[in-house]
Amino acid sequence: MATLCELAMGVLTTADGREKAAKSHAAAKMWFASIEAGQPLEIGEAKPPLRPARPAQPELLSPRDMPKRKPGSPKGRSALLHAIAHIELNAIDLHWDIIPRFAHVPLPRGFYDDWVKAADEESKHFNLLCDRLEAMGSHYGALPAHEGLWQAAIDTANDFMGRLAIVPMVLEARGLDVTPAMIDLFKSVGDEETVSTLEIIYAEEVGHVAYGSKWFHFMCGRENIDPKENFHALVDKYFTSKLRPPFNDEKRAEAGLPLDFYWPIAVT
Image (cartoon, rainbow, N blue to C red; front, side, top):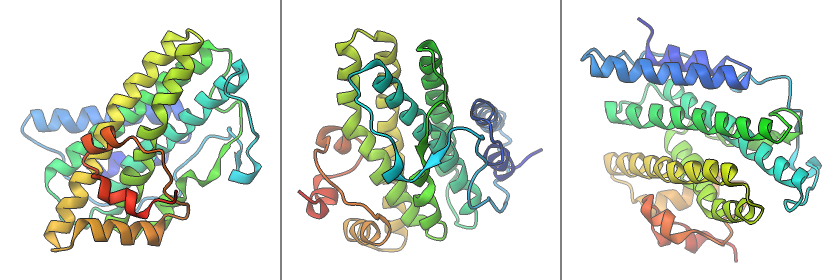
């Protein structure tokens, strides 16, 4: 029987996006089926690649080289969905990467339950966005994408609490800030299918941020560290950009991110 780390490696070493999502779904199903059967899989150990396998397309560009598009046009809206699909593909790998990369950290089974569930949902999000792109006459890989999205994983490859702070509590939390405006954009042009897709993503991303906050606080409690001060220090160390408003204070609070975690270090 495969270990959870081996299942994670199967996802991380798969290049094609749809196939990666399918392997992610299958791995999550196997994990939860083993628990239901009363024989949970072993966590195991593995050495994940520094970068996960990626398809030949999209072409990956630096942020400064990314083309500018107006989201109000059909091509601009398609480009926006393409960018979100790329984020979700990275999110699949980010959620699986943390399992083998930090398998040496003693954690309750609930941690793995949360992360596998989140990875499964990110796979659903990627497929939903690919479906919308194809319905619009495009596909994932049709446009260039941002090459810097995996940098946070590389920067925090040796720091478990740094990974929790930066990926779910900063990067995924940003999604809570920007998604409502995207939903309004697609509502304004009557694209109810895309609105429905984005609303699913929005609702489930709250849970993903909450998982990060939950286990970050767990680790701070284990090491008797002040969570707020530690979060500020880790953001200063690893987050190369700046936290900038507007913030979705309501959804951030729902996800376990108090105002005093991010407003004091925001650049206004």
